[in-house]
Image 1: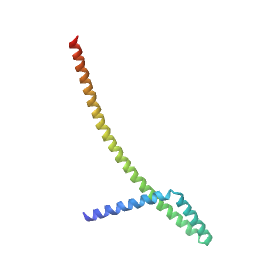
Image 2: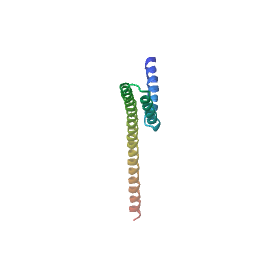
Image 3: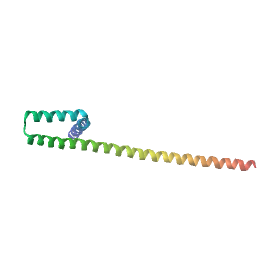
Image 4: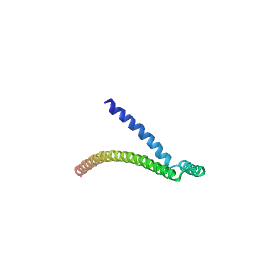
Length: 117
C-alpha cells in the first residue's frame, strides 16, 4: 500500500509541474526566451546540427507536457459532465414530482368547483 501511495503522490506532483510547464509554453516570455537562445546560439557559432537536435528534443518534451495536460483536462470535463447528468436526472425527477402535485391540486380544485355547482 505504501508504494501505491508513493506513486500517487509522485504522479500528483508530476501533473502539477506538467501543468505549470504547459502554461509556460504558451506565453510570450517562452517565445522571447527561445528567440534569444537561437540568436545566442548563432552568434556563438555553435553547430546548427546541435541546435536542430535541441529544438527537436524541446518539441518532443513540449508535446508530451501539453498532451498530458489536455488528457487531464478531458478527464475533468468527463467527470463534470457525469455530475451534470446526475444532477439533471435529479432535477427532472423533482420536476415530475412537482408536475404530479400540481395535477393533483388541479384535480382537487376541479372537484371543489364541481361540488359548489
